[in-house]
Length: 175
Image 1 (cartoon, rainbow, N blue to C red):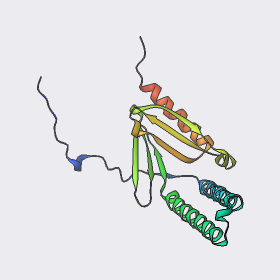
Image 2: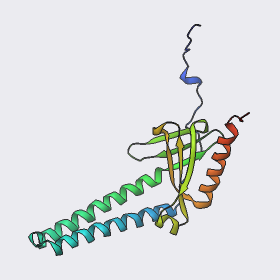
Image 3: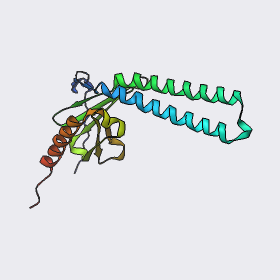
């Protein structure tokens, strides 16, 4: 048997830049904001607890510096999350699902249904308040998993059913 591995001309490949992406739901930005706010409040509570409970660090300078650092770090984190939110989008196609993310380091992940093992839908406390969920698509390779947050819960379950149907349709029947 002779080994063959022919070259592929890149100009003959399909153009992926024209794929129409669907942005994440707008309430997801509010969900992210609430998550950052609650995180900041938790850190401030810990810093206040240390200020009250540990006499050696009880000073106005500690109070000013710790609250300033916590506030600045969380504001920067929130701002970066909002920049990232604007870039995140997905595309569900006949044979694969794509997820675009990142504002500084931009990436597009493509997950062909032939590699999908299973998928799940989950939502945290804050996301549930906004009617949102995350669709996770698990692939045969550990690095190929895709998590798409900020979907309407009904859309996430519909997409899961569609993907599961595609997986089951591609499996050979046991004879």
